[in-house]
Amino acid sequence: MPVGTCPDCEAEVHVGLDADKGNTVTCDECGSVLEIVGLDPVELDIVEEDLDEDDFLDDEDENEY
Image (tube, rainbow, N blue to C red; front, side, top):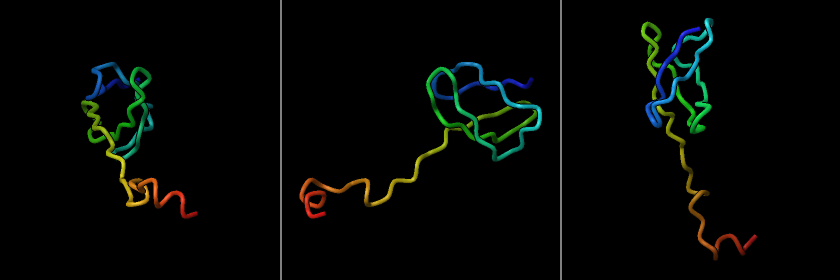
């Protein structure tokens, strides 16, 4: 089974034999969601979460509902 390195904690991350570029895997050590950006050798990159405006509601906005 191919192995990559988590860019966040440097742990080994096993990637399935049928994995393709663009697939995501989760690091068992730190829980980071990682995108497969290379296959030979396996290269992984941290997936950045998209934050919406709703994620930044202040207390006043939350109390209106």
